[in-house]
Image (cartoon, helix red, strand yellow):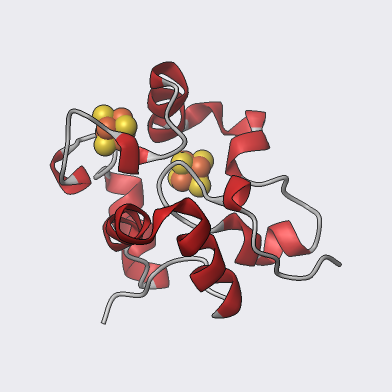
Length: 116
Ligand code: SF4
Ligand code: SF4
């Protein structure tokens, strides 16, 4: 079992914080960036193609919710179940930077900024 640590490399391409995810902490998932099994994810492959660390760096969409890859059916489903708000995560990355976001998420044990 790992502890929740501040590590900007654990910020997923979509803005989630893998460092606070139960699967990552339990050692059963390496986190989004290292998880080559997640080749199904269009957000991940789009970021890798562009050389971005996350959608916060996207030059095409200032609002990621306008992007069909980011705002897809599966992400809407998960947002509803887990009350996650990845667009708010992306906004917070832009505001605080990667290090500041990782620190905030790790200190609060959050995988995502929550929807109210
Ligand atoms: S949805 Fe895609 S980008 Fe987000 S954590 Fe999963 S694999 Fe990574
Ligand atoms: S917002 Fe859309 S186009 Fe921009 S990096 Fe993310 S997935 Fe790619």
